[in-house]
Image (cartoon, rainbow, N blue to C red; front, side, top):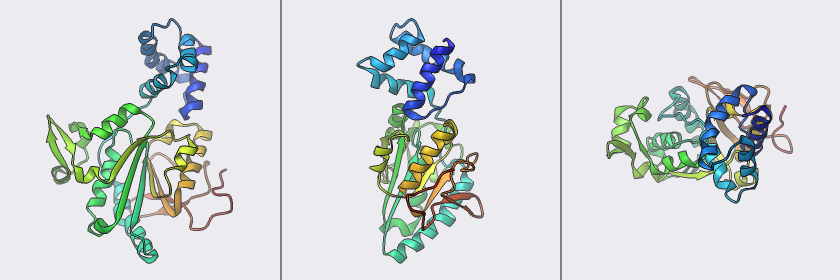
Length: 284
């Protein structure tokens, strides 16, 4: 892959979904996309670039590119200190507010849900809250990779996915299935899985308003401009006083001044203020 070919492909992927590859990533693109050249009997990466731009099957091929370039390492009950904050602090606060408003609805978005462990984890934690039994609860999992979305919809997992799962929770929420474990229908009934590009603002708008957004270990793959765009979309989707939970290594420092940073016993999370300046979130 020449330097010019690298820049063509890098910029094309960035414009599509915001994934940012630096000069140091040239070998990664060459290794992972080289397989696609062989599949289509193409001689050069420039030929492949034109394939992505003009071939009638370009949309299907772009899906393959995203599957090749995204990393999807996850497991159930990941970052348990944050999940404790979700259960012990955020949910009781939301419950109190909603009861005052006379509402019994809860909508949670798992943005970048990968193979489904995160939205199913959220659903399991919600099912462990007796007071939510009479509520209308939705957990929406989205990802850009069709490959991992297929896995999420199947809901069947090997032992590696349970490295942080309590045996009692595993026994309650899963059933053995051909040497693996299948998430049960009680959990699945709360979760919907769909394809979504976090840079597609028009489609994101169709999701409606959310009480909580989980987006953990996703924005690390974007450059500053991409991060600001995604965070602004999150801000617009959250209800006033809604919560944004990022990964432990991620923050909004130098990205957004729209959110308040809330300090809880186990973790710090971001919250959309009850009142905001006209025009939505203000970004640095």
